[in-house]
Image 1 (tube, one colour):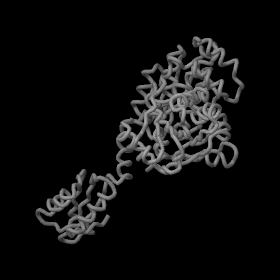
Image 2: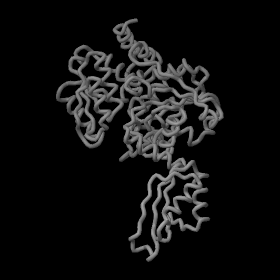
Image 3: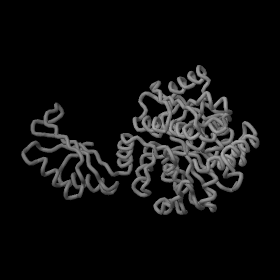
Image 4: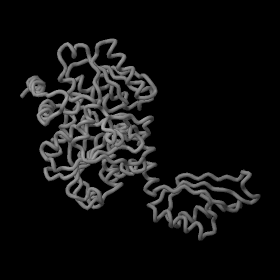
Length: 417
């Protein structure tokens, strides 16, 4: 079936605004040769932790670095000729921007993408390279979204929503079909949730074929709009969502995905920033995967409560890998600190020649790597013969941290923080 036939078949079988298994299968046909069937990799470390086989569905290796291409391509493919002629417009800080840009280029449609003024430069550059005209507007995504919607009204361009449209949900649902094909014995699927388009699409596909499969959605605790929305029975907004996981930093669920998630997703859990950064570090160190914080959220859920996933094979979806290098640096440091791999200390010693060298010798004996040292001699808090030293140490984990502290106290140092 060629692309045009698939599009026509897809349109005639739709039942707007619901999304069905036939919709997802139609979307899958449209995406042949466009999106990759991404790898499914086993994780021995997570399997030992959970007590059941754990597999990683690697959408971080998808074209444009995330699953977003799937929904964007299906949505734009379904536009009428006159809509295509008017072009499309989107607002995004990263993944959706790149998905819309590439999908539009592949389909010969002009695209304009609005991004926040502070969007990471690599994401801005990638969006331009995929063929979109990029306009930087607003300090936050809400302002960028308003600018894109104004542009759509002024020019007639079609606004491509990142998650709140049946075509987008159907496109994202193709990930669910691949999971069933690659891991037919799966018992639990864990997926990050922002607006809900990905979770809703996977739920439609998986529950229609395997209603026994448990679906768990994961939100960052600082931007978790689904728990209060599910309690209220309707989408409600969370004011000032805050999280490092910008891919799931959404203040309100989409109307279309919300009803599907409400009906088909078994559970929504939340994870902390420490758990997100620890998960990102684990993906890099143990799975050799570069994953953005939102993409690592399912792994964070497994780390947070491994016993909750013990019943059978688990698939954790790594939804994206577009992480800004500066954020990666900060997040990895945060993750190492959360894992007890960094130790910050302040201690007092006698201000005499060789005192600092003696201190460093004690640290060397317990194999603590000094990353930074600040030697303070002039401070009104200090006595006449006292000095204060602030240390940043790299350690091997919580037990090693305790060993370092014990060695310093045994050597007579006053550790004050």
